Length: 279
Image (cartoon, rainbow, N blue to C red; front, top):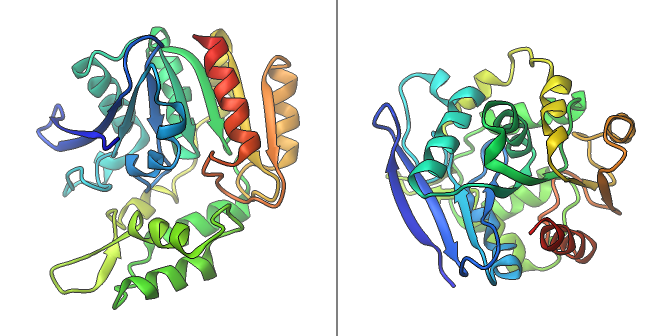
């Protein structure tokens, strides 16, 4: 099923793109929040597996994908993204939803729990926690800032194969799809990232106390998915998270880095069971 594309207008008039897969309303809706410069289209891998009986809502944050660009880089900050997500949920009548947050999307889920706790009924954090590995943060900052202006899609695929950590993309078609979700041809005919590279400027700013935000998830069931070789979510951080939330489910995927695509069989089985129980 192809998603319905909603084009919403944010509080400042910036266009916000939201994808909706509508599998019915027998189960609570699922809000899918992508990584820092990823888009809702990333969830095309996962959505078909979770769709029956529920709506799945996935958002392109401002400055990413099909959403609008701003002259003010602060418009891309986490606080603005949280506001956009809350407004999109209100516009599309999404309430009491389960949330899957990948990386930055998981941090936004924590922010939503603090700002609007009634919006969430259960949360899946995908390879993110209140402490972020410094090596991973450095890689993300460099990757986000790059505009390689590549000549063709094959060059995009080669770049991703060379730069990305181990992922469960096990054939050429999967890598091609990932490249198509990362780059697009511009007016010059060359392939550019599907995000405003100025977002990297925000990644040099000090982080707030993310442990207090993690504590805001205390009222909802919680599942954590981690790539075993992730340099963003380190094993020591997982241990601290479990000390705070001993009821948190944890799934670790061998030989996978940042971030799992969540169709890995152990992750998919755990997420399916978790969402069914939360329903």
